[in-house]
Image (cartoon, rainbow, N blue to C red):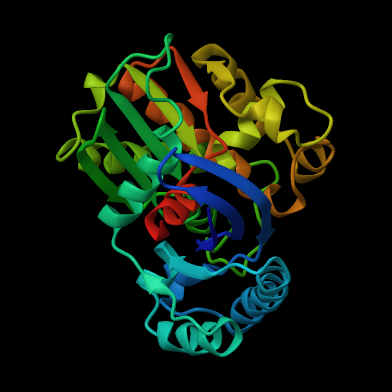
Length: 318
C-alpha cells in the first residue's frame, strides 16, 4: 500500500483525498475525503484575475489540508488546479501561496488532462459492471468548465468547454447590470434562463466537434452540481455519499429538479436541507448544464459517481 494525498482545486471548491492505494489489486481505501467551497473563480470570467479574498479563502483551506496530510502521514502529494487558475492572469500569486503552505507546486493542468483524470476516477470501479454498457460518456460539471470524456477500456475522445455553474451564474443571473457585483435575480428570469441555455448549447456544439456525444451507451455524471441534483432527487435530508454514489437518476426526474431550482427564490433553495450553503446561488445553473447534456446525448438516466477527478489524481500518483 502507498499512502497518497490528492488535492483538486477548481473554480468553486477545493477537495482533499488521503488514501491508501494498492496498484497490484486496484484497491483504493479512503482515509480522509473532504471539501470546502472557496469560490476561487469569483469574478474571473469578468476580470480575468483571482480576487484577493478568493485567494485567502483558498489558502485557509490549504492550511487545514496541510495539517490533515501531515497527521495521516501521506508519503506523496499531488495538487491539481483546474479552470479558474488556468484563466487568471495573476495565477502566480496562487502558485506561490500553495507552495508556501503545502510545499508542492500546483499543476495547472490542461482540459484534456483534467478529462483523463476524471474518466479514470469515475470508471475504474465500473469496469465489468453487468448493467452498464460501453462506451461511457463521463461529464464533469465544474464551476468554470465541463469536461466530456468518451471511452471504454481507455479514453477515445475528450473535450473541455468553458461552461460551469459559477461561470453561468456570474455571466447571466445577476440583476440589472449583469455584473458580478450586482445582486442575483431572485428567482432567475425567463430571459436569463434562456441565455444560459443558449451558452450551454453553444458549448455542447463545441464538445461535439471532438466527442461524439450521442455514441454514449452510459452517461456518468460527476462533481457537485450532479451529486446535489441527485441528493435532491433522492429526497435526502442530509448529504449521504453512500446513497448518492452510483445512484441512477432519470431524465424526467432531473427535469423536475431543475424546474424546481430555476423557479425558486434564494430562500426557497436555502430551505432544501441537503443543499450546501456554498451551492445555493449556483445550483440552478449547474442543474441546467446537466439537463441540457442529458437532452443532447439522448440519455434516459445519469449514473452518479462520487469518484471523480480526485480519485484519478490519486491513481496518477500510484
